[in-house]
Image (cartoon, rainbow, N blue to C red; front, side, top):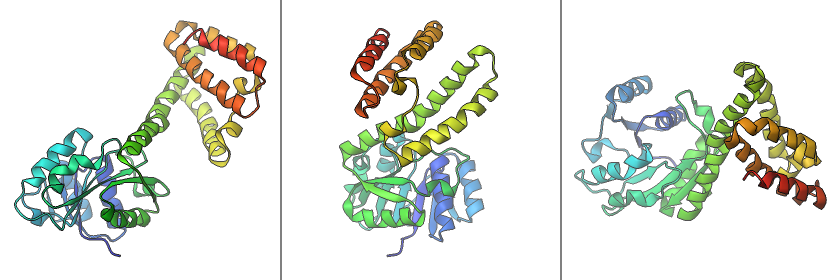
Length: 291
């Protein structure tokens, strides 16, 4: 199977990276569109794409497969506008890349004969992202099943994998991804600020903590979460936990976060047999006071 000509609407962090990745794999990128003309102009010049602009004027400007890499709030609006272009959409496929929204947002296009799907990369993208950021990741697939073989081929060209999900599974997976990526970044930022309370600079604390993060991720990839767990709760070190809570007295909101995560850590440590019942109960009572 070969891929058809492709168009991309939305050239932000994800759309631009997707465009570069497709061109790097010798896939024909027919056209690019973005509401900010200067952004799409720069990318089109870089990739030598002659058909580009703010929005397609007709379906003749679109490839058989079009990716909508626009913000979630804009997906249905863009679909509505596309559905009003003159021409038959029966042989066209439209795919959005939202993590939380289902393919049903593209229903206006389906009513005009197109096939629709969602193709969400479980990866974080910024304007510093490169084509290698697709390698080894998963894309969730949801929508019209006949589209999936083409989308799997796109993923395979990037060295990525795919996971078919229902509409409900998609939302759960995306929520999990927010915890894993977005909130991890926030947690690390918070951790650095806690570490600077003794007078150390943010740069020094960040540099000291990052190797710990890297080893933790390595351990969780190679072991179960329970086996990879370390730290005072797993050891049943009640006095250390008490000291941490005392240190966080001046930031009650962080103290609450520490306790919420601490209670979950008690359960994880208990499930692996690391904590005896008596120590686990003492830790629970201590932590529950602040939740």
